[in-house]
Amino acid sequence: MVSTSAVRIQGLWKRFGQQIAVAGIDLELPAGKFIGLVGPNGAGKTTTLSMVTGLLRPDQGTVEIAGHDVWRDPVAVKARIGVLPEGLRLFERLTGRELLAYSGRLRGLAGAEVDRRAAQLLDVLDLAGAQHKLVVDYSTGMRKKIGLATALLHNPEVLFLDEPFEGVDPVSAQTIRGVLERYTASGATVVFSSHVMELVESLCDWVAVMAAGRIRAHGPLAEVRGDAATLQQSFLALVGAQGRAAGSDLDWLGGGAR
Ligand SMILES: Nc1ncnc2c1ncn2[C@@H]1O[C@H](COP(=O)(O)OP(=O)(O)OP(=O)(O)O)[C@@H](O)[C@H]1O
Image (tube, rainbow, N blue to C red; front, side, top):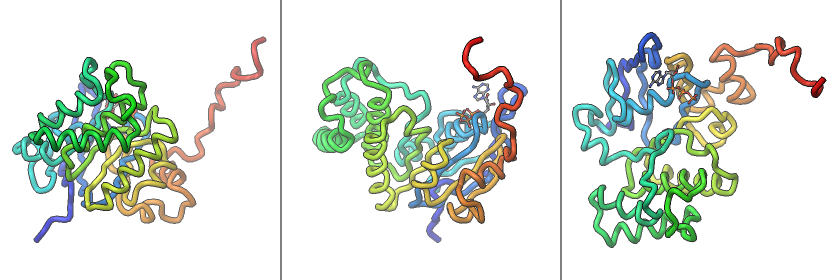
């Protein structure tokens, strides 16, 4: 039988000292979907994505991507995935164009093919004018975009993005969105983490809600949203933050300097 799961996570755990960051996750992410991993600060999203993409070794558990075990078969997995990690580190002394050329060659693509794809990606992501600038001189949003181009260059089956829209202006966000929508429409899978509910609601067709290291809900967006008017509302109910007074103790705040 052909597997329809892009990612299969079983019994995943990670502890940092006393802190349990990921507390036993079992999750199957369907292929060909635009998937949002949402959760409050410190929920364990980045830790999970790091383990799923082979950047951080789990204490326990397994992860399979397109049927390959991430830790037993890392080369097969890494050939099939693209990653835009949190706190993206880039080769700062290369130009954007050089960075893509370098990444493409590392991925084993022929030079002419890298050139063709790089030119198209730079154009679509509105970076053509900055392609000969050093990456160190790029703005936050430009760094996200060149990071995305690097992650897409080898046409991965599954793309993992940690907070891809943070620091990105609305015009660039729209561009990135268009690229990702076209990419998933062709059958590829996007998994991205965010705490911006409106964004997840407008982009994703499948979501997993995480809190305190566990998955609280997962499934098609409409199912997870349930009877709530918005994903934000069902999210607040799921993570138990409903009715929390917005700073009722901060009686000194406001009113200007006295
Ligand atoms: N390298 C580390 N050393 C110690 N603790 C860590 C480390 N990385 C993460 N943690 C802890 O694990 C928990 C989960 O962190 P993680 O970064 O995965 O959350 P997150 O959901 O991505 O949060 P945010 O939305 O704020 O980025 C937090 O309590 C964090 O302090």
